Each structure stands twice: as structure tokens, then as C-alpha cells.
Figure 1: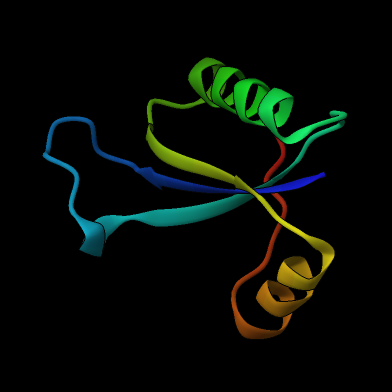
Figure 2: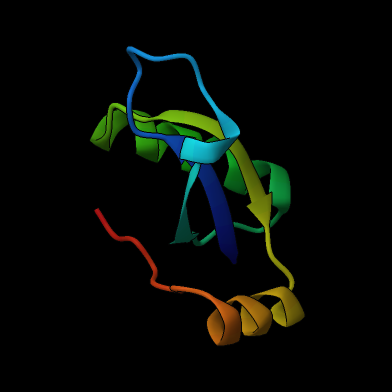
Length: 76
């Protein structure tokens, strides 16, 4: 399942919408809630980012993001 992660790179500043960045994770989970938990754990272990939101993507949403953005799966 593909998840879209909205995050801030800098913990020393207050989060601002203008500095929110996006990454995509491909997690082997059975449901959306397990993916959100696994995604937060993975990011806490491998980054110092402030995670704002993690969203599970449907196949249509993945196709849209692939066509209209900088879609690249992040691996750790």
C-alpha cells in the first residue's frame, strides 16, 4: 500500500504550510491504520522530520500523483 507523508524537515521552527514537503512510502501492511503506525515508526527511526500527516492512497490517487508531481518512493 502506498502512503503519502506530509512533513517538515526542520524541528527548530514552527511548522508552516509553505514549508511542508511530501514523500511516498510503500509499506507492506493490511490496512490503513497499520500503515500509518508503521510509517510513523519508520520515519522516527530514520529521520528527524516532524510528520504532519500520513495518508493512504488509492490506485487512482497514485496514478494522479505519478502524472502530476515528483512521485518517487522513499526507501530507508
